[in-house]
Length: 269
Image (cartoon, rainbow, N blue to C red; front, top):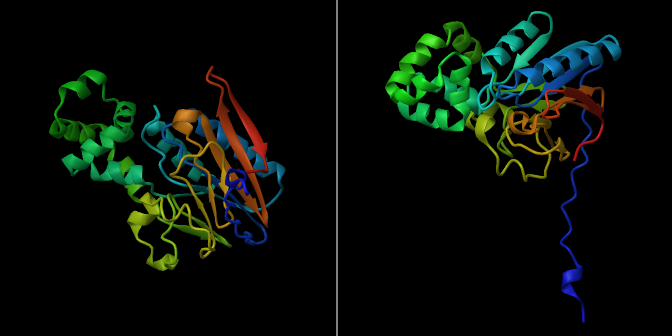
């Protein structure tokens, strides 16, 4: 008699997809920062050092969205991104948290949702104090937001992109709807989707690089690469470096005692 418990269902084979960025170009994609300015500072420095060491190239950085919320210093994450753009080609995608933030200025119910999912920390980073927050109604918080958050920051976030394509790679915040051409993807799916994108095994119109869904380490599934390693909770902020057909990872790691180290590696899960 066969022992059925000895047999495990085979995992689906990952698609083997050749992907590259154009000759002479180098790309660094950075996962969800979520208010961790300390990790972003360390990763910016590491990327700039790595870029110099790798030699001449036309270099682009893609921030995959969710720069804000949950972590303690969203205001300075935005400032760092703006400063980086002054000397580096930095393209920024809009995540679902940027969407919630902007809509919260006009919609009290959206504001309630935003505050429950890390928005409170963002408002604190702009100078709202705990006492103000606790004593204020939603309408009063909305008024305080208008006062505390500079219009320039709102306009900066409103200018974030939904999708970036470079070579054989497609960069989005959350993912794409399988089977639908990139030109027909909805803003909502690009910022919010999980399934059926995450479990889809067939090739897309390019290898999709995304954040939004937290994993302990980068996940390369052949047709997609997820690099949200949960910076705000895990203390790990990950970048994917792409050049030619090569893929490398650079991770800023907070040891929990105030020290941040950099780990460079070529493997994903």
